[in-house]
Image (cartoon, rainbow, N blue to C red):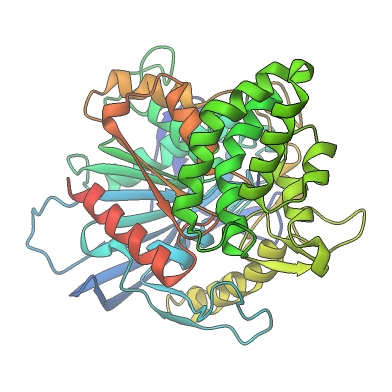
Length: 504
């Protein structure tokens, strides 16, 4: 997940950082901690995935990052699931997994999709919001076809900055990507997986990380200073957020949001009688690519009769009143839609997942904590993960696991213009560069029908306008939100598509 806006030894230097043995005795939060002995927690398990029963080893381990002077700067934790019942020499894919934020740990993908156990949400749209929370076996985990390595960047999860490190060494798009490259290279080397097929799976801001990491991995004099030659077989982007440049302006945002608004309206029975999300998406795409586009382009020169006709069609698609549409000059933002769709009943829908609802919040609300989706599903994920990591994986650490660090990590993040300056860049171009360099690199995009934050339309627009090869890119839509694996139907469909992608 992420918000808009996972036992290593001595040393490789990469862009001023090195990975060495040693580890921190950490404290909770995102601040510096002291260095102590390395900590590794390993356990043996058996599970059934996609009908296959297998044995695997779970390892929670930390890596110490050092600077060029050998100073210990940060500790990074990974959680690995590696199959152990195959003949020696078997070539098996590895998937490196991370969430986004910036400042988000990997527990969302961990407990929602890729882990051998997942959070137990019998009803994904009405999850339990008070403890006790529970986990259940997760046969949808792709562990039957690939090993899994989850990465928690510094300041998230158990990963922390050490006393000799500084936030600006890690809290930035470029710095974070260099760190991730180093972790992937070291894990690959330490586990003798240099010749294994390698994949990235990312979500939200993590898709920006994946794009930049893909460009950096092969190396080069302008990237890592060496020709590392480490390439990827594929990248999975969920809730993609690569283009944050604002390209296309307000009109493009309205056009690309419309299919998601239409699908969400249908879900809440505000669309045409008998509608389906798929049908509404198709209708909205057709309307947006023709009549709606022309109307927005015309601006104030649009004839009044055509304005009324477009207003009527928008009302049919979105479930909003004509008055709301007129008041917003035909351009409906996701925020306006979330607030207005169910306002007559005193409810608002979630931005991160439009299926969720809560009573309308007043002015000054927290954009994340008061979001109907984030406010309801976060407690279950966090509670279930803390129970699982301690009792199933035997991890005993004094510090708290940091799910999302807004103030310490997200707030001062350097997107390329300095700490805390908003992002205005299209990192899909990094992915296009990586795909140009590697003609066999494939990309899978997964989007939720009800994701009002990173809409399915914005994913399509980004892929079509960033130089990404269309013949090596596939897109799949799921009946879910920003986390396209919430719900049995969505998770099973995503698992099917991911298995097929990893097995090609």
